[in-house]
Length: 585
Image (cartoon, rainbow, N blue to C red):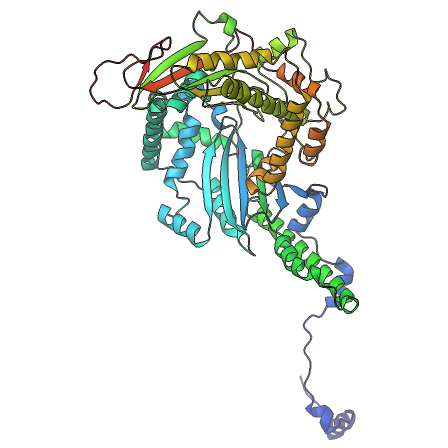
């Protein structure tokens, strides 16, 4: 295009420029960091809504009374956590419903061998066992896999620091996403469990308990120790399938305890200045500002902690495997009246240089929430048993049956100790325990008595007498108050331990039981409200009839057998052979 610019036009343009001083001409220009900072804040509010913030606002519940935070991760996993300064390390337990209870009759032990196989492998994804071990050591991590009758679980401990939980979450993410199923690890798992089976057979205490469980539950191998035949039948593909079906992120419950907000360290730092009263007027405003800063810092740390759980565990994809369509078969105790003569008692002997004896007396009992198996329910219906029989004002509290059972346990333990050991002098030690299952509607009690072989039968009869007379012997106020004080002191002491807090948090969001945060908040309230009648009624929930008690007795000493009707063992010359369990009944 033609350009026609006259000389005068150029002169006019130059003369139109505004005059500027030399100082103005030398000033530097400030470059803005944002062009829309103020306008954007007005449009979006305090912060833009992202996926994490939206999830946290809708999925986070806080019980201020007990200090428990509950979350639901995007994949369906449930989280319960609380902040305590009890220990320097944080603790975590991941629970998968199932455990040994989902084993089928043709694959007894598949869950146990499978969990042990993962532990023996110790590798995930493309990382070797050595790499994972060094990763754990360098980050001060500890991860342990195990299972019970009701659950498979992962226990982890980790340092509570700014990013202390990140390495353990990374490891757990990889464990669920890409575990390594290796044949050498499977072989080692089988060998370890075979060795453990041999140890049980040669142990006086373990073999006696195992024999009792087999007597009470018959062919149901889920509640007893694995035997070599069951272990040998398993294949790697089968145990992998069973464990994979349990490891469903949508069924996972994550329980975490630790000083995630830094409150423990801050409280400790504040205690030192609490005794100083000088210059308090000058520092009041400073203290208020410090409190606000600490509160903001704690909230930021909790937000970071929630985001770490959301990012590393909430992103594990849901499993496509389906749970058993017909549910889990609940272990059911055998009906004593249907058993042949002599089936309710068993004796055995172990060759050993020391003379000793132990007996286990067992029977049916309800679970933690007061519910038992089919046979237990039938007997309770026949006896017209009800947890509401005492008309307690707290009878509808979900923890009421559990507190009654625990107080009853303490009373029976006290009576066993004072009668069998102190008064009659028949036993070295005796105790009474309950299974207290959480998920399965089943349970049992076990009374253990240890004595000299020549007195074990008398000790067993005396222990049975204590159990049977408890139905007609009223609970004394002194017994009851001592039991409640013991439980209260134990509860207060255990609150200083992470392991106890993990047990309190467990199953808070489990749809299979009635537990909620009131079961943490109201422990002392329930114990203070119980009466002797509540304990007496709880005893009626046990199956302690003459044809409902199972007894397993074992002796140890020189010779191949022990005559329980005599005060001296019958011996015969033997070679120095390894200890072996010999059935004599």
